[in-house]
Image (cartoon, rainbow, N blue to C red; front, side):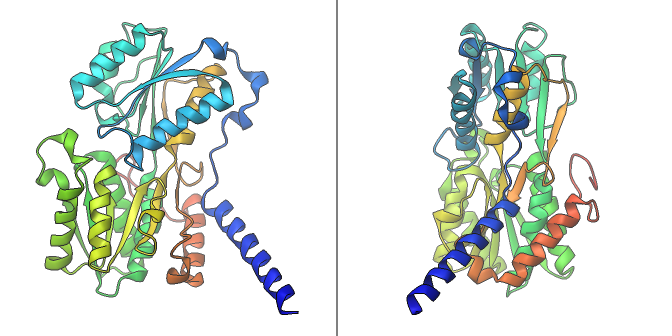
Length: 358
């Protein structure tokens, strides 16, 4: 009898986890399920070029997700691809020219904050090639260029609310890589979520670029990130830190573990890196966005515009909190679901660097 009760309990848990996952992490619909009958291009002759962000692959975050998007697109569409991992701006210019010379018909720029400079140089010179800037809104788009902007502020709002409900010291930290628009957008949403829960909580903010002057090295410097987090923990007495610094996050997570506080990851599901220390991760589904934009080009649906992907479009989300759901508690998770729906339904407007209150 006990055995059957045990089996029933396991089944119920599995069902609940499935429901939880489907609600928190719905994947972007890729071109109406990637119906091959709508593809207008010979995919075997179609080559995509990717230039990742600085820091390269292996960051367990931003760049790895971009590369995974290419792998997934190859499986779905049969396309070919090339990619580069640049170390500086000049690398990006040289890499772009190499991708063009090697027959790439679509070039995706992963280091979005300098995407404007790249398309200004190449877009008009090569009108038959499509250029897509990831994770940044630009001032000038050409007929053969587009950008993809994630509403990271929306998912960050949820993370901020969670952090505010979990802090015991009423002091929360934020450590970003560089003070650029996309990183500041995480902070704005995070701060608004914290204040939504309790307007009296104190929030401290630091950028690794305050200590690392070489921009390209900011995103892969766990040692400096560790020291920055350690200082914030010991001097400011924070007990939760939101880490938004690509591969440098690993240093922040190590400090959080060493000093027995919580952290929050970014871009991909980083919860597994330090289980029960990383409360959740603010997911930015770059892999699905890359599949989406490749599909748009293959189906001749590409538009020269900024594509916005938020909670409603499943472009951002919180991780399923597999390692911390018991620590967080069922009631808090329900509250997050309610807030998520209110954001999707425009009952809560989350401020943004890019579109305030949208």
